[in-house]
Image (tube, rainbow, N blue to C red; front, side, top):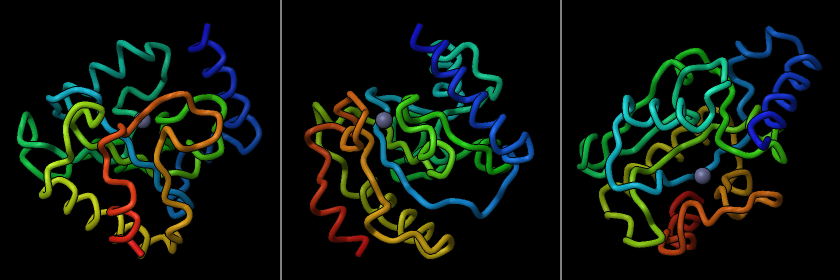
Length: 173
Ligand SMILES: [Zn+2]
């Protein structure tokens, strides 16, 4: 049921702005941080997770634009992406309550479950570097860098209670 509403919301946004909007580089206004909620992650693995969770999504790609590894699958601090990033296709990393931010937001996912463990220093460092670089490229202000579970309308703890929110925010200013 939830998936169906999500797809309806997706098609109404595409309908409103035109199919060309799927290929609209340089529109990015937000960055949204996530965790994978699992300890293992590669692009292939997360593609399969996405297929299982959102089987109706016409975009067969990870829902995020970047994944940062933790040494389990991807290397520690390794930054990877797939064709969603290559073609600037909008993300599906937020719920149907935040379609505008899906459409205008770059999704970054850290492999790990930060409800249970701390973010390794090297992985956090890679996140800071990537975020700062994207902020510069697209002129995104620090206030537009968000965490999934702290966005109104989202009911998740992502990226987890042990994510160092304040430390990260200070590092990107
Ligand atoms: Zn998330």
